[in-house]
Length: 322
Ligand SMILES: [Zn+2]
Image: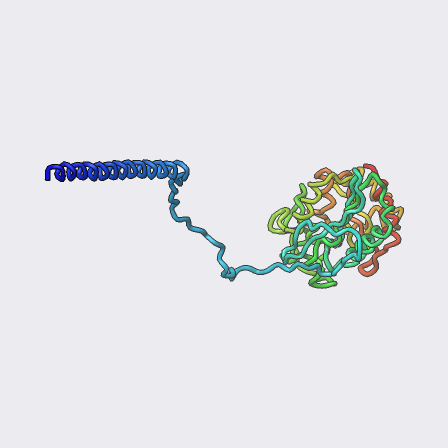
C-alpha cells in the first residue's frame, strides 16, 4: 500500500510538470504572436500614407452667353456692290465699312518705303467709271507687278462709297446712305454742313454731314491715310472739269502734281472754274494732314475709264516727289 501511494505521488508530479510546460509554452506562444501582430500593424501604419485633407470649395456660378437672338440686331452685308475678285494675286485689306456694312477695300502693290495712294468711287455709282478704272489698274498691276519700282508701295482704295454705288449708277448714287457728299465731309479748315450752290452740283439734296468727319466711309479713309506716310495721292472723280490741286489756297506741290498729271492725260489744268466753292474735300484734308501732294482728278465723262491716259498718270504719280 505505502509503495503504491508513493508511486501515485510521483505520477501526479509528473503530470502537473507536463501541464506546467504546456501552459508555459502556450503563454509564450501567445505573447510571441501578439508581438508579431503589433509589429505588422505598425509596419502597415507607416507604409500607408494618410491622405491630406480635402478643401471644400464653395459652389461657383457660371454666366453663359444667352442664345436668344437680339431683336434689334441687323446682320451686316459682307459683300461688295461690284464683285471684284482677282483670280490670283493680293487680297485686299478691309480698311472700314460703309453705313450699310459694305467693306471698303485697299489693295497694296509693292513693299517699298515711298508710299502713294489712289482713291476711287468717293461719289459712288454716279462716278462709277472711277471704280471701273481702279479695277482695271488693280488687274493690270497684278499682271505686271514690275510696274511698281522696288522702293515704293502703291495703295488703291477701289471704292470709297460702296453704298452709293449699290444704290444707283446715276445722280441718286452720288451720296452715302446718310445723304452726305463724302467729298464735303472731311474735317478741313473750311468744312461746312451747307454751302452756296452757285455753280455747284444741284441735282439732289445733299449735305456735308452732321459734323466734319461724321461718316464711317470718311473716317475709314482718314484712318488709313493717318496710318501711312503718303507722299502723293489722286482722288478720282468724273466728269470733265480737270485736275484740282489740294489745299486752300492750292498748295504748291499739289499744283505741280496737277500740272504734270494734266500734261500726261490731257485733262484740264487749271481746272474749269464753275464758281463753286469746294469745302471739306479729301484732297484738301490730305495736304492739311501730312500728305505731300494731293489732287482731285476728273475723268473725261461718266462712262469711260480713260485707262490708257491714267496708266500714264500712274507713272507721273509714282515719279512725283513733293
Ligand atoms: Zn466727284
